[in-house]
Image (cartoon, rainbow, N blue to C red):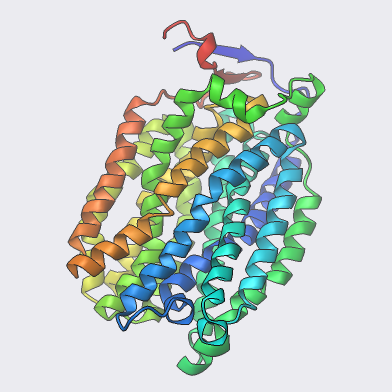
Length: 450
C-alpha cells in the first residue's frame, strides 16, 4: 500500500477550541439522534396497535411497524447523496443545520398524528412519510457530525476525539429510551392515548437548542483548506464513486455488523422482551444502562485504535458480536434483572461500542478531504438500508415464524461474519501519523498496485 503525505491544514484549532467543537458536536448529535431513535422505540412498544392494527397477533402489528422503520432507512442513501453534496460543496456546518431542521419538524409532527382508529389508513401513510423525512435527515447527519470533529482533530489522536461524535449518537438513544421509560410509567390507558406523544412533542424544544448549537459551530479545518485551495468538486458524489469504489464497499461491509446488530439489540430486543414476558421497564432499563456505559467504552475503544490500529479494535467488536449472538437471548430468557441488563451490556457496551467507537476515524481516513463527506455518507448509508433498516423486520419475521430466538441469533452471527470479512480485506489507515503531517490513504488511481 502506498501513502501520500500532504501538508497539514494551515490552521488547526487550539486544544481549547477543539474541546469546544467536540462538546458542541456531541450535543448537536445527541439532539438529532434523540429524534431519530424515538421511532425505533415506539415501533417496538406501541406503534403496532396504534397505527398498524393487523389481526390479533401483536407480533404482526409490530412487524408492520418495523416495516415503516425499514422504509425510513431506504431514504437514508438519498439523504447521504444530497447532504454529502452540500457538505462537500458548501460546508459541513450548513449540511448539519439543514438535517436537524428536517429531523426536528418530522419528529414533532409524528407526536401530533391521529391514530388508525381516528383517520384510518391515512394514519400509517402519514407516519411512514414522516419516517422517510427522518431517514433523509439521518442520511446526511452522521457523516457531517463525524467530520466536524475528525477534520479538526490531530491525526495521532483522531480515534479518541472522533469517537466523541458517537457518544452523541448513543446519548440520543439514551435520551429517547429514557423519555419512553418515564412515560410508560403512566397508567396504560393514559400511555396509549396521549403519553407516548410527549417524547415526540418535546423535540420542538430540542430542535431549537440544536439549531442554536450548530449555528455557532466553526467550519472544519480541513474543509476550509479545501475551499481555500479551490479543490471543491462540482459533483463530489460522482467523484467519490470514481476514485474510491473499494473504500465505499469496505465501509458498507464494516457497517453491517455495527448497524444491523445495534438495531437488533436496541429495537427488536424490546419486542422480544414483550414476547417472552420480560417487563417493558426492565428492557428499557437494560438499554439505558448499557448505552450509558457505552458512552465511556466508545471513547475507550476509539483511543485504543490510536494505539493499536483501527482494524484490530473493529475486528474485536465484529467477532464479539458473533460470539454473543446466542448468549444475548439466553440471558434475556432468564427474566432475571441482573442477567437481562448484563445481556445488553455485552451487546451494546462492548461489541457494538468497539465498532462504533472506531468507525468515525476508520471511515474518515478512507477518503480524501474534497469528497470525504460524500464518500463517508455513501458507505455508511447504503449499508444502513439492508443492515439497520431490515434487521428488526427480519428478526421479528423470524420470531413470528419459528416462535424462538435461535434463528435471530444465527442472523446476528451472519451480520458479524460479513463485517469480519470486511475488516480482513481492509487496509490499516495508519492512525499514528508523523508529527506535523497528515497521513492519508491515497486514492485508488494513485496506487501502484491494481
